[in-house]
Amino acid sequence: WSKKDFSWTKKLEANNKKVFGNHSFRPNQREVINATMSGNDIFVLMPTGGGKSLTYQLPALICPGVTLVISPLVSLIQDQIMHLLQANIPAAYLSSNMEWTTQQEILRDLCSSHCSYKLLYVTPEKVAKSDVLLRQLENLYARELLQRIVIDEAHCVSQWGHDFRPDYQSLGILKQKFPNIPLLALTATATASVKEDVVQALGLVDCIIFKQSFNRPNLRFSVIPKTKKCMEDIDKFIKDNHYDECGIVYCLSRNDCEKVAKKLQEFGHKATFYHGNMDPDERASVQKMWSKDEVNIICATVAFGMGINKPDVRFVIHHSIPKSIEGYHQECGRAGRDGHYSSCVLYYSYSDYIRVKHMISHGSVEQSSYASRSTTSISGRVMETNTENLLRMVSYCENDVDCRRFLQLVHFGEKFDSFSCKKTCDNCLKTHTLVDKDVTQIAKHLVELVKSVRQEFSGTYILEVYRGSMNQIVKKNLHDNLKLHGAGKNVAKGEASRVLRHLVIEEILLEDIKKSDLYGSVSSILKVNENKAYDLLEGRQTIMLRFPSDV
Ligand code: ADP
Ligand code: ZN
Image 1 (spheres, rainbow, N blue to C red):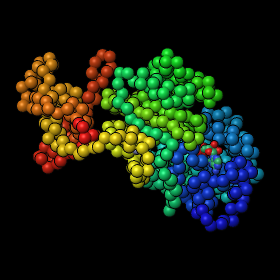
Image 2 (image 1 turned 90 degrees about the horizontal axis):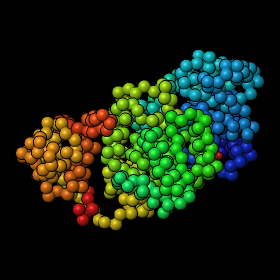
Image 3 (image 1 turned 135 degrees about the vertical axis):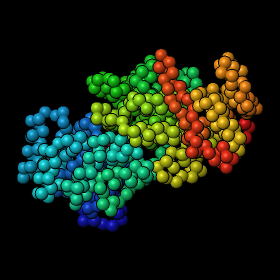
Image 4 (image 1 turned 120 degrees about the horizontal axis):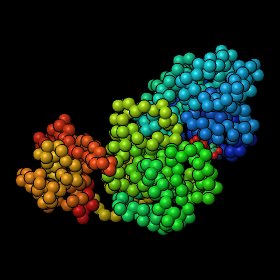
């Protein structure tokens, strides 16, 4: 799609320069444009900042008719329209909370013979709920003025993804109603199964897929154990590495955002917070201060993200575990868009994982900015997917051996040789040699212990009994009489707990999360997943883990 000359090539290049002010095309832009202008259905996976908008705005400009763009967030749409109008490209949007008369005007223009708009943006719920819009599109279609359909953030279609949005599912209707109009689905994040799901739900025909590497060579990745001194660690990290530079600290809850921001202010940083509980004015003012460099650090939930085009974000810190590898990759992707070196540091503790898991099962997780809060009802399947996504993230954090880039990219179905990391992640930087160790016996003991305490206790407790603790609770429960009490007294604590977490990640042990007291703290009770534990208990499964050779 890149080499061949098309009838539009000259026009394309001229307009790219003249109207959009670009000297050349970025990777895959030309290819995607040629393929969509040839009439194909297309699925594009391009990293954030890769220049997805140009791939439909340029064709919209040079083709006759109207391009329909479905985009999830009104503020993003407004931003796009502002840029288009500045470049003298007529564009409009329709949203439900717009004045009816304004909507009428736009609709009237669309059905008039001169039809001045080149691009029409709508939110997905507009497609799902507005018969008027559909009739209008049918009208355009009948007059051969419906040029192309674009679905931005297409991964929202899939329940397997990390940002499922129910209104996106009704977009399948577009291909049914307008079968021969080329459709262009765009996203910056999708695993193979999400992609399949999107292609199927939208009804794409003989779809061409464009995909480029998700590796971001200028980002450095590390995972750091989170301790009680986490805030001091973060302060030191910023002062040592990014003094007075711009960054985002992603926090789990709204409350955390405010606390973390306050603490950073006390440490002398220009920090503030941003979350979904603030009213739109407050949020807009924070965004403004941030883009004008009046504050350096935003402590935010994932609600802060979309449409953030600040090129010089030098660090993204995760104060708590992210909810999925896709989400993590996207959040980190906001750093270093100018191509300069930037840091991505994740503070990880197992207890944060328990917290997130509890939030997921109660549907109280803050959605990213474009998931509309009112319409999202968490179904069982979505909850299951969320839990699985979170477990993968735990496994990423627990892994202190493999290259971080390799671990992320493998998730997107991309092969990556960790040699190419060039020691830009914490695991590749480690100098100690690693040894594979057979931990089958420890694993077996731990599973048996969970059974012998009748599946009523937490992982921490199991480890105490295993290592032979004689504390009051152990004695009160008479667990010092168990056969396996103290069976692991010669096993290092870190080693035993790694094996235990491995068993959870592999779902040989399952966690039941409970609110344990009046203060709302949560704890997890371990249970045995008989199906998956069977082979281990019968001596038919070996479990190997890698450890630094000095363990
Ligand atoms: P995405 O939607 O993929 O995150 P955008 O479409 O918002 O990315 O583009 C990101 C930035 O890159 C924008 O500021 C855009 O003007 C710029 N850009 C896009 N294509 C080019 C190009 N070919 N040359 C230079 N800049 C470009
Ligand atoms: Zn690496």
